[in-house]
Length: 334
Image 1 (cartoon, rainbow, N blue to C red):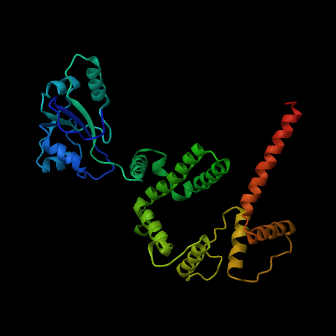
Image 2 (spheres, one colour):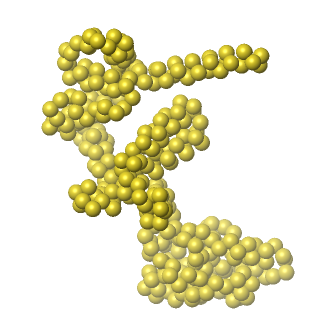
């Protein structure tokens, strides 16, 4: 079968029209509409197929039937065009395509031209719609998922974030892809929980989440969506900081918005970085916690040099782990 529309053949023509359920019904390509209007017969085994109301509204008669390969070939004399709309949302009927392939390969049947015609295509990000639908069903049906709360899931968000970082450090693309999916699941899960909120002020959907971040990204990239100019990464950073400063002008402290629950080294670096950016001359404490304050000083020094102390310590720890394993192997004589 080809994926290219071909002129009607004297031998007859059977067209399998595939459509994506991730595209609004009725939004078909002009090749699809042209083929449907010019067909002698159109079949669809699913009487509730979402495309049928729109196709029939366009004046195309659709027969609710699931003909076999043999029946289709018999019903397709020379000069005839038959169109089959598979019942599955965005795939062909494997039994039908296998049957047509078997007939064509037998050499005993005068075959019409066979054509696979995509009637609609997925846009980038379309599979996210599948995730939203699957999450919605799980939330409604699964006994465990249906009882979860934002607080109950909080620990999983932290765990998935750490696993994502580990995948990045390992450089394993397959693992990275999987861990990104796990992080994305947390976002969709929390958004679905929020839809069930009894307090209207606390209720929102995944579309609200997406709309919020889209608005923020556009606002913080005036050099992309506005009239500002940024030729270097440094220019972009300066614009970003100015934009954030306007957004956060209601804050009373540079420490507002810094989550205290993050890892200690990351927290120390973030606080010292905020103080340095605000040009606040704040002496590091040195009183009754010498070790803690020494670590704080190291984090401040790393941040001032543009080094993430959390990443640096994690890298050193991984090296130390490898050294431990090497020593263990040597002790075992390996």
